[in-house]
Image (cartoon, rainbow, N blue to C red; front, side, top):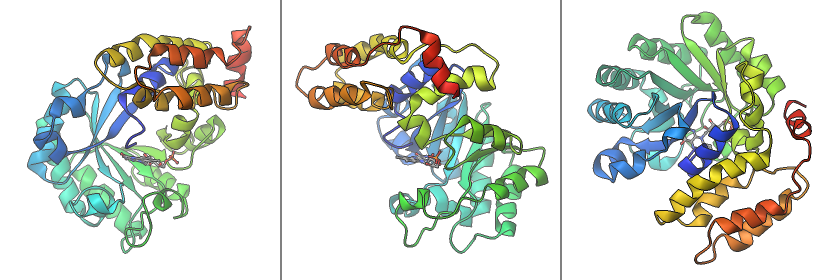
Length: 324
Ligand SMILES: Cc1cc2nc3c(=O)[nH]c(=O)nc-3n(C[C@H](O)[C@H](O)[C@H](O)COP(=O)(O)O)c2cc1C
């Protein structure tokens, strides 16, 4: 998610779950090819498994960037066919491509030829003017015909004329049953459902009908939810026992980032959700908001903020909250 799932957020997320597949923000092929490539692809090997999301439609450029993804160590390369913003529409990037399934297929074919990484597509169930079940099936058939095996489906259409990107994440109704129908109709494809999913109970329900669940906003605003994923869905132990332990595990990474000149406030804003709903959580956030932007702010701000949250004496109590 643009400006949200930065390396800083992902590093925290990885402390909470070892097995969740994490995604980068979307990077356009133009930015990668003509801009500061190493900066756009920068990540920490701790973040793996990690997918790089690309925005673009030119097959040659997509192929080049898919090869870069492999070269830089990503585990998957994903094509964004869901972003509704005007800025990207003008460049034939994102959800507007749902009107051009042949073009998406061509791009996916080129990507597959250029990398041995899995090439996946994230898309909507339609866009205004192309929102029928048949349109969606045509899209899936053409793109899977090009070799894509995994589709991450945001279960609402994007309205490209008249709604803002934010409205496009809330206003068009969610149609989970359409995603279920896709899995039923194309059982050989991996169908991952996305959109408005917030709890493990909802995840379990969706997993009855699909192969996987993608969480966006909830995973960002309430990252501690991720701490239960490994035990709940992967049969593995929880990697951390408390929010405090998770944050402590991020501190050396924060120091490294500070050492290379990153401002603390650029890092700390992605930690804000960690103590959501906890006693002292508000004080944690306030302390960071009031201090992280000050010149020369360092790790001590995070430590001071963390000290405002009482540490649970019994870590089991904390983990019980996750599965509640
Ligand atoms: C701030 C923000 C930025 C986003 N950026 C991207 C993006 O770069 N690529 C993408 O595929 N989806 C992006 N999305 C959409 C989410 O991935 C997701 O599809 C959408 O929010 C619905 O899922 P959710 O209800 O779990 O958040 C973004 C969402 C938000 C809130």
